[in-house]
Every structure is written in structure tokens, then in C-alpha cells.
Length: 311
Image (tube, rainbow, N blue to C red; front, top):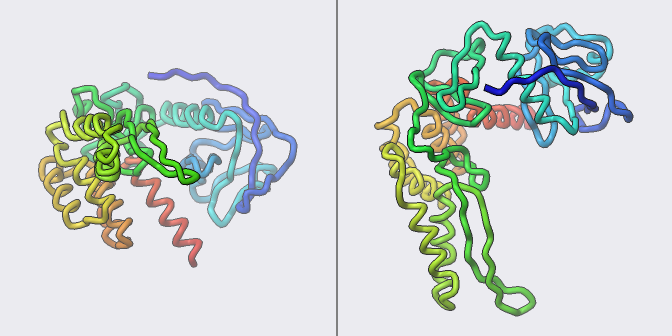
């Protein structure tokens, strides 16, 4: 478990239009009582959540927070929050989460990194999500025992088995043909996608064929027994083959009916097909399986903000 002590940082706050409230940075610190900004304390009891949003830290409040005079001038009543920016933004978030967890009455322990998870504001569920290592574990410990890394793919947005991927492709620039290799870190579906997009072009000139085939092979081999269809389902969803993707996700859901990431992936598939009603239904199923699953909560916050903006 990561230990952390109170520390000082400089910060600025911003209004809803992302305009700075003051020019010269002020000092703040995170401690056992909460977060102190410019000598005014915000107690953990008054904070509902802290989230990253486009490089900013958004501190959302519970109903009727007790705020100091200066913090009140930064308060955005429309969204019930303040917006913070600092060079130590990730450290602030980490310390905030750890100190808040120490004050929690009900906690769980991550089966992978043994990080303590605050469970005061979450419903009981079969699984738990760890913000520290991004793993999903069940009530009895780590779900995956083979050491593979599963998480949201930074390139596609789907839950998948992650690893290093290489894309071998030809491109034309100034009427000349070039060949390049691009490195990525992402899910198995990337390896499958690169194969289908580039294998024919690579076959014309042979260079790139071995690497493309190797990437395709790696993406289709050695899958976790509960997720043998995962890469194929993600690829089908990316191609707009919703029915095929839904059938494959359903097969995995029959083996793991409460696993949140499978419902999350299917919800993303519906969202990309502009069926928001079905997407919300499966996002809800995701939270029923893991009530603190942050990828689902993040998308739902985005949809809520989008809906408020349209109104």
C-alpha cells in the first residue's frame, strides 16, 4: 500500500469558461482533515468526488458544503464544484484519495496491489475497482492470476488485454511511397484491426507482412479462458457490427454475469451506434456488478454534462 504524508502545492482556480480567477498561484495542501486552499479548509465530508477533466481537477461538493469566503468566490454553483489546476495535479488526486480512504468507515482491499478502497458511498457489489492499479477484483481476491494486464485501451476505449502493438503500413507523401512502423500500447483489438487494414497493402510489396502476421497472431493467442471472444467482440464493435459484437459479449457475460467491463464494452458499442437508451441500460448493469467502476462512472458523468449543456 502506498503511504503518503501531507504536502504543499501551488494552484490556480478557474471559472466555468476556463478563465483564471487569479494571476499569481496560491498555496494549498492535502492533509488528514481535507484539502486546504489559500488557508481555507475543505473537509472530506463536504466533498462528493474529485475527477480529472481535460487537464483540470474538478472537486464536486455534496449538498450544502461549508466553504470559506475565498473558496466561495471560486465556487461554480451551476455544477456544484470548483476547478483546480496545478503542476502537481496527479499527486493532489492521489493524496486526496488516500487520505479520504483512511477516514472511511467501510473499506475493501484490492486483490492485486492491496490498496485500501473507500466503500462508504458505494453499494454492495460482486466486484471492486482499484483506482491505484486499475484492476478489477472480486470479494475473494484478484480475478486474474496469470499476470496479464487488462484495462481500458487508450487507443480504442474498450476494456481489453493490453500490450505493445506495432503497425506496419505504407503511405504516400509528395507522390512517393513510404513504409513506416508505428508503436502503440493498446488492446488485442488493435492488432486485429491493423491486420485487416494493412495486410493487403503489405502483401503488394512483402515488407511488413511478417510483422503484421505476428501482431495478428499475438492478438488471437493465449487469451484468458473467460475472455476468449473479447478481442473479436471489440473488433466487431469497432467495425459497426453491433449484432455480432452483442452476441460475443453475451457469451462472455454468461460465464461472468456481473463482470462490469463486459457490460461497459457493450454499452460503448451501443453508444457508438447512437443508441443511448441501450447504452445507459448496460452502463447501469456495469455498476450493479461493480458500483465503483470508474470507467463507467466517467462516461456517465460525460453524458450528464452533455445533456445539461444541450438543455
